[in-house]
Length: 366
Image (cartoon, rainbow, N blue to C red; front, top):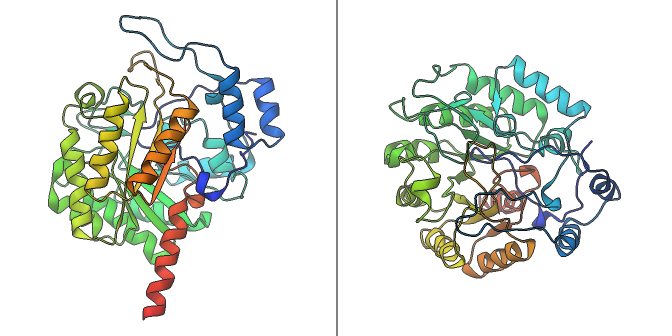
Protein backbone atom coordinates (compact mmCIF):
# COMPACT_ATOMS: atom_id res chain seq x y z
CA UNK A 1 0.00 0.00 0.00
CA UNK A 2 1.08 3.57 -0.67
CA UNK A 3 2.80 4.72 2.51
CA UNK A 4 1.96 8.04 4.15
CA UNK A 5 4.60 10.75 4.32
CA UNK A 6 5.58 12.06 7.74
CA UNK A 7 4.05 15.52 7.84
CA UNK A 8 3.23 18.12 10.44
CA UNK A 9 -0.35 19.42 10.42
CA UNK A 10 0.75 22.74 8.96
CA UNK A 11 2.74 21.10 6.16
CA UNK A 12 0.08 18.65 4.96
CA UNK A 13 -0.30 18.39 1.19
CA UNK A 14 -3.73 18.77 -0.40
CA UNK A 15 -4.56 16.70 -3.47
CA UNK A 16 -8.01 15.62 -4.93
CA UNK A 17 -10.04 18.39 -6.40
CA UNK A 18 -12.97 18.55 -8.82
CA UNK A 19 -10.56 19.96 -11.40
CA UNK A 20 -7.51 18.00 -10.28
CA UNK A 21 -5.78 15.88 -12.89
CA UNK A 22 -4.19 12.48 -13.24
CA UNK A 23 -0.78 11.53 -11.89
CA UNK A 24 0.11 8.29 -13.65
CA UNK A 25 0.22 5.19 -11.44
CA UNK A 26 3.89 4.27 -11.75
CA UNK A 27 5.66 1.65 -9.66
CA UNK A 28 9.25 2.51 -8.81
CA UNK A 29 11.05 0.14 -6.44
CA UNK A 30 13.60 2.62 -5.08
CA UNK A 31 11.00 5.35 -4.67
CA UNK A 32 8.59 3.07 -2.85
CA UNK A 33 11.29 1.71 -0.56
CA UNK A 34 12.18 5.24 0.52
CA UNK A 35 8.53 5.84 1.32
CA UNK A 36 8.40 2.66 3.42
CA UNK A 37 11.38 3.93 5.38
CA UNK A 38 9.24 6.91 6.40
CA UNK A 39 11.01 9.94 4.92
CA UNK A 40 10.12 13.51 5.71
CA UNK A 41 8.27 14.71 2.59
CA UNK A 42 9.94 18.09 2.36
CA UNK A 43 13.47 16.65 2.61
CA UNK A 44 12.65 13.73 0.32
CA UNK A 45 11.36 15.99 -2.47
CA UNK A 46 14.29 18.37 -2.01
CA UNK A 47 16.78 15.49 -2.35
CA UNK A 48 15.15 14.04 -5.48
CA UNK A 49 14.96 17.51 -7.02
CA UNK A 50 18.69 18.11 -6.48
CA UNK A 51 19.58 14.75 -8.04
CA UNK A 52 17.27 15.09 -11.05
CA UNK A 53 18.91 16.35 -14.25
CA UNK A 54 15.95 15.98 -16.65
CA UNK A 55 14.27 18.83 -18.54
CA UNK A 56 11.67 20.70 -16.49
CA UNK A 57 10.38 23.29 -18.98
CA UNK A 58 9.37 23.37 -22.65
CA UNK A 59 10.78 26.20 -24.72
CA UNK A 60 8.57 28.05 -27.20
CA UNK A 61 7.85 25.86 -30.22
CA UNK A 62 8.97 22.64 -28.52
CA UNK A 63 6.44 19.90 -29.48
CA UNK A 64 7.82 17.23 -27.14
CA UNK A 65 6.41 16.18 -23.76
CA UNK A 66 8.21 16.54 -20.48
CA UNK A 67 9.02 13.40 -18.52
CA UNK A 68 7.46 13.08 -15.08
CA UNK A 69 10.04 13.94 -12.39
CA UNK A 70 10.53 11.34 -9.62
CA UNK A 71 8.91 13.43 -6.86
CA UNK A 72 5.56 13.23 -8.68
CA UNK A 73 5.33 9.43 -8.97
CA UNK A 74 3.05 7.28 -6.82
CA UNK A 75 1.81 3.69 -6.68
CA UNK A 76 -1.50 1.97 -7.41
CA UNK A 77 -3.81 2.10 -4.36
CA UNK A 78 -4.72 -1.02 -2.37
CA UNK A 79 -5.95 -1.85 1.13
CA UNK A 80 -8.97 -3.10 3.08
CA UNK A 81 -10.33 0.33 3.95
CA UNK A 82 -9.94 1.43 0.34
CA UNK A 83 -11.99 -1.55 -0.83
CA UNK A 84 -14.64 -1.01 1.89
CA UNK A 85 -15.19 2.64 1.00
CA UNK A 86 -15.27 1.90 -2.73
CA UNK A 87 -17.90 -0.80 -2.18
CA UNK A 88 -20.04 1.48 -0.03
CA UNK A 89 -19.88 4.30 -2.58
CA UNK A 90 -21.12 1.96 -5.31
CA UNK A 91 -23.98 0.69 -3.15
CA UNK A 92 -25.14 4.24 -2.42
CA UNK A 93 -24.62 5.34 -6.06
CA UNK A 94 -22.19 8.09 -5.09
CA UNK A 95 -19.37 9.54 -7.20
CA UNK A 96 -16.03 10.82 -5.92
CA UNK A 97 -13.58 13.21 -7.50
CA UNK A 98 -10.92 10.82 -6.23
CA UNK A 99 -12.01 8.32 -8.89
CA UNK A 100 -13.29 10.61 -11.65
CA UNK A 101 -10.16 12.80 -11.63
CA UNK A 102 -7.94 9.69 -11.30
CA UNK A 103 -6.14 10.90 -8.20
CA UNK A 104 -3.05 8.82 -7.35
CA UNK A 105 -3.42 9.36 -3.61
CA UNK A 106 -6.79 7.69 -3.40
CA UNK A 107 -5.19 4.72 -1.61
CA UNK A 108 -3.74 6.88 1.14
CA UNK A 109 -6.91 8.94 1.62
CA UNK A 110 -9.34 6.03 1.58
CA UNK A 111 -6.96 3.73 3.40
CA UNK A 112 -6.51 6.12 6.30
CA UNK A 113 -2.86 7.10 5.88
CA UNK A 114 -0.60 7.97 8.77
CA UNK A 115 -3.34 9.04 11.17
CA UNK A 116 -5.89 6.36 10.33
CA UNK A 117 -8.56 8.81 9.15
CA UNK A 118 -10.25 7.81 5.90
CA UNK A 119 -11.08 10.76 3.66
CA UNK A 120 -12.98 10.84 0.38
CA UNK A 121 -14.05 13.92 -1.50
CA UNK A 122 -17.63 13.35 -2.64
CA UNK A 123 -18.55 14.66 -6.09
CA UNK A 124 -22.23 15.59 -6.14
CA UNK A 125 -24.70 15.75 -9.03
CA UNK A 126 -23.28 12.82 -10.97
CA UNK A 127 -20.03 12.14 -12.80
CA UNK A 128 -20.68 14.23 -15.93
CA UNK A 129 -20.00 17.97 -16.25
CA UNK A 130 -21.67 20.41 -18.63
CA UNK A 131 -18.38 22.22 -19.18
CA UNK A 132 -15.22 21.16 -20.97
CA UNK A 133 -12.12 22.65 -19.36
CA UNK A 134 -8.97 21.66 -21.24
CA UNK A 135 -7.15 20.39 -18.15
CA UNK A 136 -9.90 18.27 -16.60
CA UNK A 137 -10.49 14.53 -17.05
CA UNK A 138 -14.10 14.48 -15.79
CA UNK A 139 -16.64 13.42 -18.44
CA UNK A 140 -18.62 16.16 -20.21
CA UNK A 141 -22.07 16.40 -21.81
CA UNK A 142 -24.60 19.14 -22.56
CA UNK A 143 -27.36 16.95 -21.13
CA UNK A 144 -26.19 14.93 -18.10
CA UNK A 145 -28.54 12.57 -16.30
CA UNK A 146 -31.12 14.11 -13.95
CA UNK A 147 -30.11 14.67 -10.33
CA UNK A 148 -30.57 11.77 -7.94
CA UNK A 149 -33.00 13.08 -5.27
CA UNK A 150 -31.65 10.54 -2.78
CA UNK A 151 -28.05 11.70 -3.15
CA UNK A 152 -28.09 14.25 -0.26
CA UNK A 153 -29.31 11.62 2.22
CA UNK A 154 -27.06 8.87 0.82
CA UNK A 155 -24.06 11.17 1.06
CA UNK A 156 -24.88 12.07 4.67
CA UNK A 157 -25.29 8.38 5.58
CA UNK A 158 -21.93 7.43 4.07
CA UNK A 159 -20.04 10.33 5.64
CA UNK A 160 -21.57 9.75 9.08
CA UNK A 161 -20.63 6.06 8.90
CA UNK A 162 -16.98 6.88 8.09
CA UNK A 163 -16.60 8.92 11.29
CA UNK A 164 -14.63 11.77 9.71
CA UNK A 165 -13.71 15.12 11.26
CA UNK A 166 -13.75 17.09 7.99
CA UNK A 167 -15.29 16.38 4.61
CA UNK A 168 -15.18 18.10 1.23
CA UNK A 169 -18.21 18.16 -1.04
CA UNK A 170 -17.43 19.10 -4.61
CA UNK A 171 -19.48 18.84 -7.77
CA UNK A 172 -19.57 18.94 -11.52
CA UNK A 173 -20.90 22.08 -13.22
CA UNK A 174 -24.58 21.76 -14.07
CA UNK A 175 -25.41 24.65 -16.40
CA UNK A 176 -28.48 22.67 -17.50
CA UNK A 177 -30.14 23.42 -14.13
CA UNK A 178 -31.76 26.77 -13.34
CA UNK A 179 -29.92 27.06 -10.02
CA UNK A 180 -26.76 25.26 -11.17
CA UNK A 181 -27.46 22.64 -8.49
CA UNK A 182 -27.11 25.08 -5.57
CA UNK A 183 -30.16 23.76 -3.73
CA UNK A 184 -28.99 20.16 -4.17
CA UNK A 185 -25.58 20.96 -2.67
CA UNK A 186 -27.14 22.95 0.18
CA UNK A 187 -29.53 20.13 0.98
CA UNK A 188 -26.60 17.73 1.20
CA UNK A 189 -24.84 19.99 3.70
CA UNK A 190 -28.01 20.23 5.80
CA UNK A 191 -28.47 16.44 5.82
CA UNK A 192 -24.89 15.98 7.01
CA UNK A 193 -25.25 18.61 9.73
CA UNK A 194 -28.42 16.91 10.98
CA UNK A 195 -26.45 13.75 11.73
CA UNK A 196 -23.04 14.91 12.86
CA UNK A 197 -20.85 17.87 13.91
CA UNK A 198 -18.43 17.16 11.09
CA UNK A 199 -16.80 20.21 9.45
CA UNK A 200 -17.99 20.64 5.85
CA UNK A 201 -16.17 22.33 3.00
CA UNK A 202 -17.96 22.88 -0.31
CA UNK A 203 -15.85 23.28 -3.44
CA UNK A 204 -18.48 24.75 -5.73
CA UNK A 205 -18.96 25.82 -9.37
CA UNK A 206 -19.34 29.50 -10.29
CA UNK A 207 -23.15 29.29 -10.80
CA UNK A 208 -22.60 31.77 -13.66
CA UNK A 209 -22.01 34.41 -10.98
CA UNK A 210 -25.61 34.21 -9.74
CA UNK A 211 -25.75 35.88 -6.29
CA UNK A 212 -28.88 34.00 -5.23
CA UNK A 213 -27.25 30.63 -5.90
CA UNK A 214 -24.12 31.61 -3.98
CA UNK A 215 -26.24 32.76 -1.03
CA UNK A 216 -28.03 29.39 -0.96
CA UNK A 217 -24.67 27.68 -0.44
CA UNK A 218 -23.45 30.22 2.13
CA UNK A 219 -26.67 29.85 4.16
CA UNK A 220 -26.52 26.03 4.22
CA UNK A 221 -24.42 26.04 7.42
CA UNK A 222 -21.20 24.93 5.71
CA UNK A 223 -17.84 25.76 7.30
CA UNK A 224 -15.60 26.52 4.28
CA UNK A 225 -16.67 27.98 0.92
CA UNK A 226 -14.20 27.03 -1.82
CA UNK A 227 -14.13 27.98 -5.49
CA UNK A 228 -11.03 27.57 -7.64
CA UNK A 229 -9.58 30.37 -9.75
CA UNK A 230 -7.46 27.59 -11.40
CA UNK A 231 -4.96 29.73 -13.36
CA UNK A 232 -3.83 33.28 -14.09
CA UNK A 233 -6.08 35.72 -15.95
CA UNK A 234 -4.17 35.62 -19.26
CA UNK A 235 -4.39 31.84 -19.54
CA UNK A 236 -7.98 31.44 -18.34
CA UNK A 237 -9.61 31.52 -21.83
CA UNK A 238 -7.23 28.79 -23.05
CA UNK A 239 -7.30 26.59 -19.94
CA UNK A 240 -10.88 26.75 -18.69
CA UNK A 241 -14.26 26.47 -20.39
CA UNK A 242 -15.28 29.74 -22.04
CA UNK A 243 -18.06 30.17 -19.45
CA UNK A 244 -15.56 30.03 -16.57
CA UNK A 245 -14.18 33.56 -16.50
CA UNK A 246 -11.39 34.76 -14.23
CA UNK A 247 -13.28 37.85 -13.02
CA UNK A 248 -16.43 35.80 -12.53
CA UNK A 249 -14.58 33.44 -10.18
CA UNK A 250 -13.32 36.41 -8.19
CA UNK A 251 -16.90 37.70 -8.04
CA UNK A 252 -18.17 34.37 -6.64
CA UNK A 253 -15.62 34.39 -3.82
CA UNK A 254 -16.28 38.08 -3.10
CA UNK A 255 -20.05 37.53 -2.87
CA UNK A 256 -19.62 34.56 -0.54
CA UNK A 257 -17.45 36.63 1.80
CA UNK A 258 -19.87 39.55 1.70
CA UNK A 259 -22.82 37.27 2.53
CA UNK A 260 -21.00 35.97 5.60
CA UNK A 261 -17.76 37.75 6.57
CA UNK A 262 -17.02 35.04 9.17
CA UNK A 263 -17.09 32.25 6.58
CA UNK A 264 -13.69 30.89 5.54
CA UNK A 265 -13.21 31.20 1.78
CA UNK A 266 -10.66 29.24 -0.20
CA UNK A 267 -9.24 28.94 -3.72
CA UNK A 268 -6.60 27.04 -5.70
CA UNK A 269 -4.10 27.70 -8.50
CA UNK A 270 -2.46 25.17 -10.85
CA UNK A 271 1.11 25.90 -11.92
CA UNK A 272 3.03 24.69 -14.96
CA UNK A 273 0.73 25.94 -17.73
CA UNK A 274 3.02 28.72 -18.95
CA UNK A 275 2.26 31.42 -16.41
CA UNK A 276 4.90 33.92 -15.27
CA UNK A 277 5.95 34.63 -11.70
CA UNK A 278 4.46 38.11 -11.95
CA UNK A 279 1.11 36.66 -13.05
CA UNK A 280 1.05 34.15 -10.19
CA UNK A 281 1.76 36.83 -7.63
CA UNK A 282 -0.91 39.10 -9.13
CA UNK A 283 -3.46 36.27 -8.94
CA UNK A 284 -2.59 35.70 -5.28
CA UNK A 285 -3.02 39.44 -4.61
CA UNK A 286 -6.36 39.48 -6.44
CA UNK A 287 -7.61 36.65 -4.22
CA UNK A 288 -6.37 38.24 -1.03
CA UNK A 289 -7.88 41.64 -1.95
CA UNK A 290 -11.39 40.10 -1.94
CA UNK A 291 -10.82 38.41 1.41
CA UNK A 292 -9.97 34.85 0.39
CA UNK A 293 -8.59 33.15 3.53
CA UNK A 294 -6.92 29.96 2.31
CA UNK A 295 -4.97 29.19 -0.85
CA UNK A 296 -3.46 26.07 -2.38
CA UNK A 297 -0.93 25.96 -5.23
CA UNK A 298 -0.02 22.72 -6.98
CA UNK A 299 1.50 21.23 -10.13
CA UNK A 300 -0.74 20.78 -13.18
CA UNK A 301 -0.57 17.22 -14.54
CA UNK A 302 -1.74 16.26 -18.04
CA UNK A 303 -4.51 13.63 -17.66
CA UNK A 304 -4.44 12.35 -21.27
CA UNK A 305 -2.83 13.30 -24.59
CA UNK A 306 -6.04 15.11 -25.52
CA UNK A 307 -5.58 17.60 -22.70
CA UNK A 308 -3.26 20.57 -22.29
CA UNK A 309 0.43 19.73 -22.14
CA UNK A 310 2.53 20.50 -19.10
CA UNK A 311 4.71 23.48 -20.04
CA UNK A 312 6.81 23.34 -16.89
CA UNK A 313 7.38 21.15 -13.86
CA UNK A 314 7.74 23.75 -11.14
CA UNK A 315 10.51 22.95 -8.68
CA UNK A 316 9.86 22.29 -4.96
CA UNK A 317 12.06 25.29 -4.24
CA UNK A 318 9.76 27.59 -6.25
CA UNK A 319 6.67 26.16 -4.55
CA UNK A 320 8.24 27.03 -1.20
CA UNK A 321 8.67 30.59 -2.45
CA UNK A 322 4.93 30.84 -3.20
CA UNK A 323 4.09 29.48 0.24
CA UNK A 324 6.18 32.24 1.82
CA UNK A 325 4.60 34.91 -0.37
CA UNK A 326 1.13 33.62 0.53
CA UNK A 327 1.95 33.92 4.21
CA UNK A 328 3.28 37.44 3.67
CA UNK A 329 0.09 38.45 1.86
CA UNK A 330 -1.91 37.40 4.90
CA UNK A 331 -3.66 34.18 3.92
CA UNK A 332 -4.75 32.16 6.98
CA UNK A 333 -3.22 29.13 5.30
CA UNK A 334 -1.12 28.64 2.16
CA UNK A 335 -0.47 25.08 0.96
CA UNK A 336 2.09 25.06 -1.85
CA UNK A 337 3.89 22.03 -3.27
CA UNK A 338 4.21 19.76 -6.33
CA UNK A 339 1.50 17.35 -5.12
CA UNK A 340 -0.83 19.92 -3.62
CA UNK A 341 -4.48 20.18 -4.67
CA UNK A 342 -7.58 21.40 -2.83
CA UNK A 343 -8.77 18.71 -0.45
CA UNK A 344 -6.37 15.83 0.13
CA UNK A 345 -6.37 14.55 3.74
CA UNK A 346 -8.85 17.28 4.61
CA UNK A 347 -9.26 15.84 8.10
CA UNK A 348 -5.65 16.80 8.83
CA UNK A 349 -6.00 20.20 7.22
CA UNK A 350 -4.88 23.25 9.10
CA UNK A 351 -8.33 24.79 8.70
CA UNK A 352 -9.75 22.14 11.03
CA UNK A 353 -7.92 23.66 13.98
CA UNK A 354 -9.05 27.18 13.06
CA UNK A 355 -12.68 26.11 12.79
CA UNK A 356 -12.64 24.16 16.04
CA UNK A 357 -11.11 27.09 17.90
CA UNK A 358 -13.89 29.32 16.54
CA UNK A 359 -16.52 26.83 17.68
CA UNK A 360 -15.06 26.66 21.17
CA UNK A 361 -14.96 30.46 21.39
CA UNK A 362 -18.59 30.75 20.31
CA UNK A 363 -19.61 28.14 22.90
CA UNK A 364 -17.80 30.07 25.65
CA UNK A 365 -19.53 33.32 24.67
CA UNK A 366 -22.93 31.65 24.90
